[in-house]
Structure formats: C-alpha cells, structure tokens
Image (cartoon, rainbow, N blue to C red):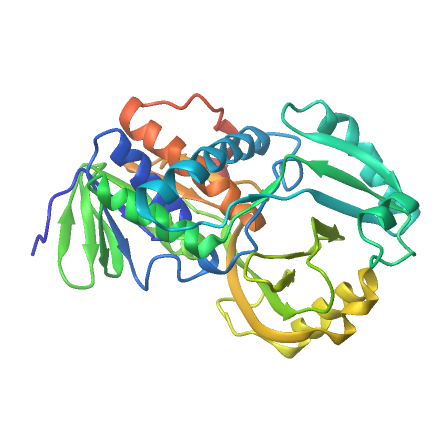
Length: 372
C-alpha cells in the first residue's frame, strides 16, 4: 500500500535527517522523514552540544569546510529558530580551554595553533599555567597551560533538534513513525522506500540513519563502513560558581549548562548497539574530571546518559550520492561532532537534491570509497 507521495523521503530523524528536511523545505521541496523511534531520541538528543570547528577528525583537512559551514548555520539559526518556533535552543557563545598536563600534550596543542589562529572568526591564544588559574582557580595546578579559544559555542541538542523539526514542518515537511526495510527500485533508480507495513513512493531517498548505516549496505549493493561509537555523559550538581568556559583534556570535557548542571564526558566505547549507561563509564568520566578539577569530588550525580555516534572506519563523514542506485543520498559518519556537522550535512544534501551539486567540496566523503 502506498501511503503518501512526497518528493523526498528521509530515513532517520536525527539532526542530519531533520536538517535535510529543513533545508529542502526552504527550497520548496516536500519531504517525509521516517523515524523508527522518535525525533532526536538517540545521539542527536543526548550529545554534549559543543560547537568547536577547529579540532576533530579530518580537521584541519577535508572536514573543516563542513564544520565551518555548520558553525555558520548554527549562528544563523540561533537567531531565527527561537523566533520562528518559540523553542529556546540555549545557544550561547562559550570559550573553549584545551588543557595540557604533559609535555606531549603541550607540544601537540602548540603544533596546531598556527593553523587555528589563521581561521577567521576565532581568537586563539596560548595561556601559561598562571593564565589557566586566572581563567578558573579551581583547575588543577598540575596543568602546564592550555589553548584558549573564543568564537566557539554550545547548544542544547534536543531543544535544537526539536526547534528544527518544528521549523521543517512549517516549511511543509512531514514527520512520521515507521521502520524502513529497503528501497523500492525501477532498474537502477529508486522509486520509493519499503516499510514494515506499506511503501512510500518518492523521487529521492536520503539515508541518514546514523550508527545503523551499515545495515543499508545491502540496499545499495555497496559497503557503508559505519559503526556505533558509544559515548556517555554525566550531569552533575556541582559546588561553586558556574564555569565560564568549556574545558577539555584528552578528549574529555566539561562545562556548566543553562540548566545549572555541570555536563561532563565522554567515553569512546565499542559496545555494539548497547545504549545502557554503565558504572565503569561513570567512574572513568569522574576520574578525568577530578584530575582537572579536584574540588568536584563533592559533585552530585543528577543524570547519566549514553548514546551511539556514527563513526566511519576512516573517521570522515559519509556524504553524497549512492554509487549504485540513482536518486539515493547517504549522510552519516559524523563521529563525535554530529551536532556541529549535522546542520551543514543537511544543507549539502539538500543542495545535491535541488541543484545537483554543493559549493562545499565533498569528494573525500564519497559513499563509494569503502568498496575501492
């Protein structure tokens, strides 16, 4: 049974899928988002929400242009979305302090500063140990220094996805519950998607299914090498004043959010599709936090979350037209930077559908690369 006939069906209601629907709507293209659970119910709703384009897998490198575009879009939407939807996305400009505790940390941090300082829109500087204490005296005196960056920001991920969903619906997108089991084809061309109950005919299909992307390999006759990377976050009621910046060390981070809680994480675990929070992760995260801020030993755990992030085997996004099925686009593999990259990946995917090209280079993200 055919239930509807949109121009585009987007499989996946995380940030990439919803952003694609939003930008298609701005271009006047109708879309239906099919989500198995609920919008933003996985990594897009439980991420840290840090917006820092100057570091991460593929940065500097091919991912930077996507990250920079993601930051531009977030700044734009921080003004428009709350006005359009009434949802406060809790966007705020938040400086970032990346600490060094060893000579190796120090050398690595300083090695990347030249490139970072050359990027427009950011103030990047090295602070010595005394400067770290000036930023916040609660930080351990074992810190040798750090890279202090202004121009970065934070957003509350679930609120942001919710607001973007409302905005996409106002532009004509439809959000529906369902489980897609395959792609309907006529020869080499996609003509719709197959659900557990029924079908939806359409002209284009976007596969934005996050850590479950490997499952669509059989639909496309090409491997999509993406696996789940589990990450866990603690929300703490912490003593003392709120932290004025986001603090990071060795891939871990913390900051005070608008809810008044100290959010801290994260882990990188290969745990399959298990999204259960664990005591082991809690202890690991707390040990890292206490090394940086020993006074947080008195913090009280309020909430402990876990989510699965989509990580490709080469650490880069998977973005572009599918190689074997015309009319299908893949958008996944955001790793730890989904909230930042997701907005840009949605815009790029919408551009590919409406214009046939993108003004941001995406050759490095070709979905066909895993079969070469």
